[in-house]
Image 1 (cartoon, rainbow over the protein chains, first blue to last red):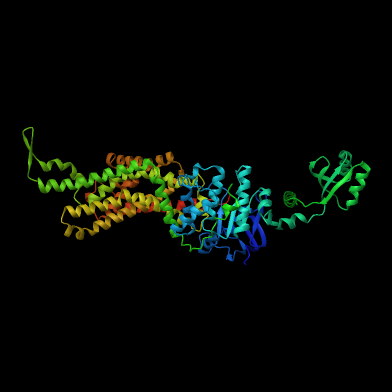
Image 2 (image 1 turned 180 degrees about the horizontal axis):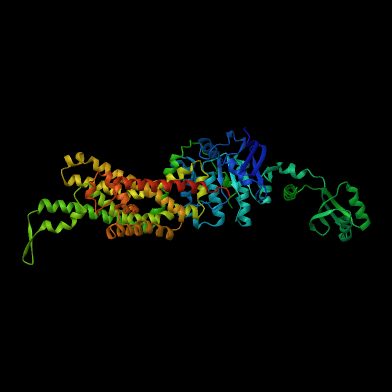
Length: 310
Length: 312
């Protein structure tokens, strides 16, 4: 199967400003989270992946479709047919009903009208907008708007979905539903998903792989498990007894408490050269009993902050 | 909740062939007409369009009927015998006789309604795309920026032609039936071509102008003000300069609707000396102004539509 993305020494400059520096990246099909702080070059990368702007130098492919050239070239039209894009902006057409909006999207992608209509009904039913499909899109709630935007990206059944902040403006239940939907589209229906978001929890919930971009460079690439499991200085420790003295002693020894889950139940980062035995020695000194001690992975948030602050 | 497994089982792949971006422009045009047709105001304005059409349609019929059926008849008014034909003298100015000026005058009068219609339509069809952020929806698709402009212009062109060219062709057909149809249609094919040419000039110029002004001002009220400025204020100013101050007839070129009228009469091959009011600039001068307006609108659109950020 061809790679989802293959980028070789991709650079993009705007005048004297270099938005992307020499990016080389290869990703297999799957669900990918694209993370980065504001101004990291994420949007520029997405624009290049959609063929909206060409790279200044370097080359790349999305599912074997070459990147580059003018945005209105036939090659870039072919590229955009492979991608269903869900923009962050509202991007609705006021006055059209849900089914007309999705049909129009299908026709814009090049579907024959009859197919686009039939497919619009199918996709809206699939996204549980069946009953709202004849209502005008401007009357939709925030959750329905996000779903109809996903429907217009999905209407021509593209192999790649590019989702820009898909949970923006959703309440927790709506967000959870949207994330499950996106995950299922990838896992059960073979869609590759590129998810661009500021919400790290969204990436953790949906994506198999993460690309962290900062300062116009790719800083980290890998599966969530690989990236977050690499560190050996994170522990989850739980003790019985009065934990105050034990915690004070830990902190004196240079251990950072990263999170507290209950009395005497902590997630900690230990200094270099620390051994497991040290926990037990300090526990004995403070009269507490270590009930659980397990190696813990780094969270995506910790990884992200460590990466962008490096 | 939308992501339930039983729901997702309904997802089916689509395996068809995608067509070229030209079809996307047609889809955009259809959506534009749908959006307009949903507003009662536009039906009201179309009723005015029909009113003007029926005035010309039945006026043409009346003139022929009076001429052929009651040409020599008179009626007594205050003891004075007045020929029936005199009652239609006021229609002479409109030239309701299936000639070049019939169609020129018809489109001229329809123009008043069309200008109002387009001033209001611009914000709905184009301004909203900028105002409500719909543009990324279009431009993220596999189409060029000019397909977007073409699609919008096509939609507006349909509205313009429904109000001008289509009824003008109907008047041409009617004129053939009222006179000698065996010779009229054949002898006046150039008039039909002129009507279609006039329609084409109106379609291209006004659709580009609507899209450009809607991209510029976006909302309805400023859009109406700009159009009133273009088509009412500049007309008054041109009339005041040429008819009042006796300035050069070239000053009429600032009146865009008059320029379009002159280009239309050029298409209809009307004699420049018969154009009212006199004096008028030359046909070619009006054509240069119209071409200049089209070029300026296209240049402006190129710059503005290119500047749109699809991914912020």
